Image: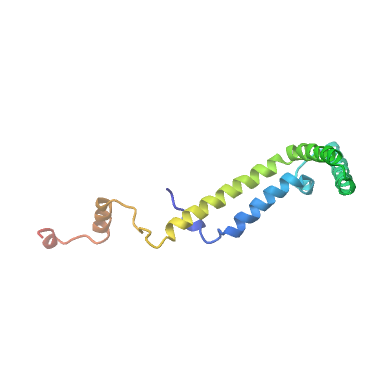
Length: 144
């Protein structure tokens, strides 16, 4: 495992939970993130209309008592969300990549902050050569 010591201080569980929350919010409320994408005017207008329809359906579902009708409205809301999620998929991929990176940093951090972490990952021969290069032995010391 490659341990990137330079990236450790900025990583935290709060960043990971914030990213997970944002990804989940992206799935249920994709209309909030449409402004962050480059869409054509036609797509923007279409999504704004769908967002308005979704808002109306949410208001409507609150007043419905019949479960079959609630189910029908719920399916309409899901269909609208699925359409909008397809439009914000690039943003979701970007956030998922950031989440993976942060999780990898946490994983690395747990290794090198572990109390029994071995600080040395070099072979003994490599260390000996390195130390001899830094502190060469005198000819008298070689006899020992």
